[in-house]
Image (cartoon, rainbow, N blue to C red; front, side):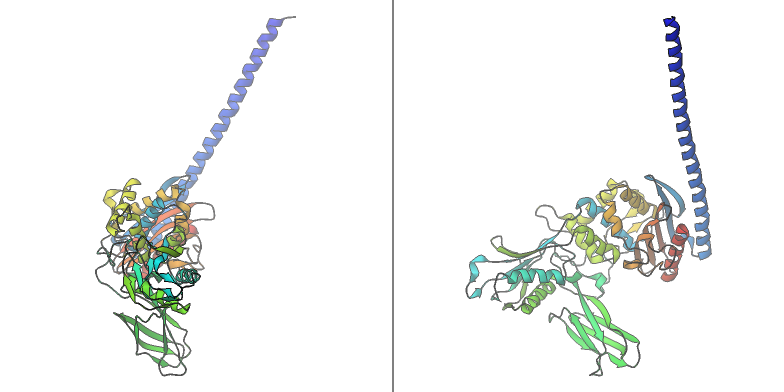
Length: 492
């Protein structure tokens, strides 16, 4: 028996097996590489085709190219490939897409479910069987979402203390923020519209008043309702009623006077208008007093501002909805007031009051940290209600790409954006079109400025990030339709 020969044969057999296995692995790797190369080639071809289609839309629009800053990128396996760009590094006025930078910085600093607290407090030494002889304190915690339902919660909780008469005043502690109501970074001219509402650490109902106008069959004039009606405002009703369904109602606030004019048809639907208020402290305090009265709790004194003493007893408190829901209020409805409230919250440190300029430092520090191209943006206001902000489409797309890769903030960021054809400022756009429900994006508008930035998905799983900015004198509706046509082309 030749043991040596058998050993040699075994060695040869073993080597053959190793070589065969190695060959199989090499073939597998080669096939994977070929697949990746083929996929890359197909993506490249698809990107080229998309580029041609978009260029055709741009050309057919006949919009001046110098007025545009556009960029579209395909996000694939955490990599971003630009498939179309036009003047992408040109700095333009971005308007409200500035809020995307604010949202990202807020989510970076405040974790999901972060909440703001509003409290009611009393002086425990002034409570007796005869009632309460001291002041009632309400302290604002910088909650941008504090509205009527939340005030009811506070009041109902307070009612369980069985105090039905307050001999003192309502003292509003608004000192978490500074006293600047309208930051100088906003557009210079003040208007009475709700989008130009003042900011305060104690604020209520977005510091805006609801005005309802409806047909009154018992009068020549329509009926005007203020909600909430605190007694601050007087109504000057100059409106008249006509036959039919048409309405042409105008509402103006001059100080504490609400002037209603125009006409409303007898078959017209109720008309609602939103106007801002001037003083968040008085507005919040007067509403608290009204809500207490409706609960059978009477306040003898008036409303004043002041600091809540440290010796008080907290008798009621309300925690806001989570930060991600507040961001949805900001982005879906392009709420400037919420953007500035959150920015002041960003700046709070120790005993320092919330301040917009320091808040903007925080936002710009975040943008620097994520390596935004410094020569392609300049932000002084978090809402975009200014012509001083400047940003290129490429800079904004960089922000969108970084956020998309940051799983800690991306889900909340994405869910805060309007959905095409569904809600927010995109509710009526791309409806019954290929892009319906496939686009989540922030809109922007100022006189001569139209913008749109966000994400567009496709049924094949591909996702695009895009930024469109227009600065010019063309009709805004035409520009919006142009932007929507590009997105429909991407998704078809």
